[in-house]
Image 1 (cartoon, rainbow, N blue to C red):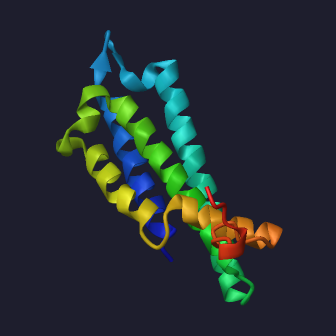
Image 2 (cartoon, rainbow, N blue to C red):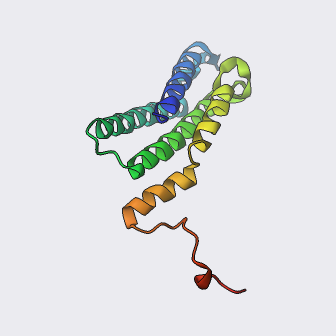
Length: 150
Protein backbone atom coordinates (compact mmCIF):
# COMPACT_ATOMS: atom_id res chain seq x y z
CA UNK A 1 0.00 0.00 0.00
CA UNK A 2 1.40 3.35 -1.10
CA UNK A 3 0.49 5.03 2.20
CA UNK A 4 3.15 3.12 4.17
CA UNK A 5 6.11 4.61 2.27
CA UNK A 6 5.64 8.17 3.54
CA UNK A 7 5.11 6.84 7.07
CA UNK A 8 8.49 5.10 6.98
CA UNK A 9 10.20 8.16 5.54
CA UNK A 10 8.65 10.32 8.28
CA UNK A 11 9.89 7.91 10.95
CA UNK A 12 13.40 8.18 9.55
CA UNK A 13 13.26 11.98 9.55
CA UNK A 14 11.98 12.02 13.14
CA UNK A 15 14.66 9.60 14.37
CA UNK A 16 17.43 11.57 12.70
CA UNK A 17 16.14 14.90 14.04
CA UNK A 18 15.75 13.59 17.60
CA UNK A 19 19.36 12.32 17.55
CA UNK A 20 20.64 15.56 16.03
CA UNK A 21 18.88 17.74 18.61
CA UNK A 22 20.30 15.71 21.51
CA UNK A 23 23.86 15.83 20.14
CA UNK A 24 24.12 19.41 18.83
CA UNK A 25 24.68 22.12 21.40
CA UNK A 26 23.85 25.80 21.12
CA UNK A 27 24.28 28.41 23.87
CA UNK A 28 25.73 25.70 26.13
CA UNK A 29 22.72 23.35 25.92
CA UNK A 30 21.54 20.61 23.55
CA UNK A 31 19.08 21.89 20.96
CA UNK A 32 16.62 19.32 22.36
CA UNK A 33 16.41 21.41 25.55
CA UNK A 34 14.72 24.34 23.78
CA UNK A 35 10.92 24.52 24.02
CA UNK A 36 10.18 25.23 20.36
CA UNK A 37 12.30 22.27 19.29
CA UNK A 38 10.48 19.98 21.72
CA UNK A 39 7.15 21.26 20.38
CA UNK A 40 8.18 20.48 16.80
CA UNK A 41 9.43 17.00 17.74
CA UNK A 42 6.14 16.36 19.53
CA UNK A 43 4.18 17.46 16.49
CA UNK A 44 6.28 15.24 14.25
CA UNK A 45 5.70 12.23 16.51
CA UNK A 46 1.96 12.98 16.68
CA UNK A 47 1.82 13.12 12.88
CA UNK A 48 3.63 9.78 12.63
CA UNK A 49 1.31 8.12 15.13
CA UNK A 50 -1.77 9.46 13.35
CA UNK A 51 -0.45 8.37 9.94
CA UNK A 52 0.27 4.90 11.32
CA UNK A 53 -3.25 4.58 12.72
CA UNK A 54 -4.81 5.66 9.42
CA UNK A 55 -2.59 3.17 7.56
CA UNK A 56 -3.54 0.41 10.00
CA UNK A 57 -7.24 1.22 9.58
CA UNK A 58 -6.93 1.05 5.79
CA UNK A 59 -5.28 -2.36 6.09
CA UNK A 60 -8.11 -3.61 8.33
CA UNK A 61 -10.72 -2.33 5.88
CA UNK A 62 -8.86 -4.06 3.04
CA UNK A 63 -8.62 -7.35 4.96
CA UNK A 64 -12.36 -7.22 5.65
CA UNK A 65 -13.13 -6.48 2.00
CA UNK A 66 -14.65 -3.12 2.96
CA UNK A 67 -12.08 -0.68 1.62
CA UNK A 68 -13.45 1.62 -1.07
CA UNK A 69 -11.61 3.87 -3.53
CA UNK A 70 -12.65 6.80 -1.34
CA UNK A 71 -11.00 5.23 1.72
CA UNK A 72 -7.79 4.56 -0.21
CA UNK A 73 -7.74 8.05 -1.72
CA UNK A 74 -8.38 9.75 1.62
CA UNK A 75 -5.65 7.72 3.29
CA UNK A 76 -3.09 8.36 0.57
CA UNK A 77 -3.79 12.07 0.27
CA UNK A 78 -3.89 12.74 4.01
CA UNK A 79 -0.88 10.60 4.89
CA UNK A 80 1.30 12.11 2.17
CA UNK A 81 0.24 15.60 3.24
CA UNK A 82 1.17 14.87 6.87
CA UNK A 83 4.47 13.32 5.78
CA UNK A 84 5.38 16.50 3.90
CA UNK A 85 4.55 18.54 7.00
CA UNK A 86 6.67 16.22 9.13
CA UNK A 87 9.65 16.57 6.78
CA UNK A 88 9.19 20.37 6.78
CA UNK A 89 9.29 20.41 10.58
CA UNK A 90 12.44 18.30 10.47
CA UNK A 91 14.02 20.75 8.06
CA UNK A 92 13.18 23.61 10.41
CA UNK A 93 14.72 21.77 13.35
CA UNK A 94 18.02 21.32 11.55
CA UNK A 95 18.25 24.92 10.37
CA UNK A 96 20.70 25.29 7.50
CA UNK A 97 21.74 21.65 7.83
CA UNK A 98 18.18 20.68 6.87
CA UNK A 99 18.88 21.44 3.23
CA UNK A 100 22.13 19.45 3.07
CA UNK A 101 22.14 15.91 1.71
CA UNK A 102 24.33 14.80 4.64
CA UNK A 103 21.41 15.08 7.06
CA UNK A 104 18.83 13.23 4.91
CA UNK A 105 15.92 15.64 5.43
CA UNK A 106 16.40 17.16 1.98
CA UNK A 107 16.50 13.64 0.52
CA UNK A 108 13.29 12.82 2.39
CA UNK A 109 11.62 15.83 0.77
CA UNK A 110 12.71 14.60 -2.64
CA UNK A 111 11.45 11.09 -1.85
CA UNK A 112 8.09 12.33 -0.57
CA UNK A 113 7.24 14.61 -3.46
CA UNK A 114 6.69 11.87 -6.07
CA UNK A 115 4.69 9.81 -3.56
CA UNK A 116 2.46 12.85 -3.01
CA UNK A 117 1.97 13.04 -6.78
CA UNK A 118 1.96 9.53 -8.27
CA UNK A 119 -1.12 7.30 -8.25
CA UNK A 120 -3.14 10.50 -8.28
CA UNK A 121 -2.13 13.85 -6.88
CA UNK A 122 -3.39 15.05 -3.52
CA UNK A 123 -6.09 17.08 -5.28
CA UNK A 124 -7.34 14.21 -7.43
CA UNK A 125 -7.43 11.86 -4.44
CA UNK A 126 -9.42 14.48 -2.55
CA UNK A 127 -11.93 14.59 -5.41
CA UNK A 128 -12.26 10.79 -5.41
CA UNK A 129 -13.06 10.91 -1.70
CA UNK A 130 -15.41 13.86 -2.21
CA UNK A 131 -17.30 11.91 -4.87
CA UNK A 132 -17.76 9.04 -2.44
CA UNK A 133 -18.97 11.36 0.32
CA UNK A 134 -21.39 13.43 -1.78
CA UNK A 135 -22.28 11.19 -4.71
CA UNK A 136 -21.22 13.91 -7.16
CA UNK A 137 -18.18 13.58 -9.41
CA UNK A 138 -16.83 17.12 -9.42
CA UNK A 139 -14.02 16.16 -11.80
CA UNK A 140 -16.42 14.87 -14.45
CA UNK A 141 -16.62 17.42 -17.27
CA UNK A 142 -19.99 19.01 -17.94
CA UNK A 143 -21.75 17.88 -21.08
CA UNK A 144 -21.44 20.06 -24.18
CA UNK A 145 -24.96 21.43 -23.78
CA UNK A 146 -24.19 22.61 -20.24
CA UNK A 147 -20.93 24.37 -21.09
CA UNK A 148 -20.78 28.11 -21.26
CA UNK A 149 -20.59 29.61 -24.72
CA UNK A 150 -18.34 32.48 -23.55
